[in-house]
Image (cartoon, rainbow, N blue to C red):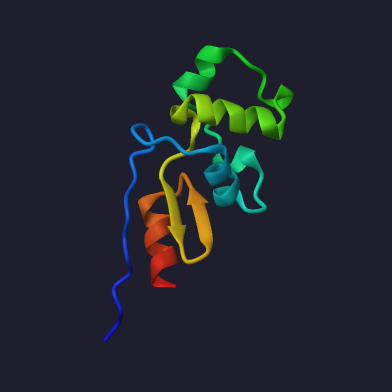
Length: 94
């Protein structure tokens, strides 16, 4: 019998991530992987994505959670940002 995976959900609009949590989720990944450059919230800022450094991206995500690519899913030790339902289903099956 397979053990059912534990599932926890967090509304990071109501309970925003801290800088430490963002850095822990990134664990070696670049902040640009977590940042949603296509978000209407980002487009309103009229910023050049190439002008933003990693620390700028983290600071912006802390200020505006809509700039975080959703969903944020952690499976085992790996974190996926903005993965489609199909991709997540493939990951879970593997």
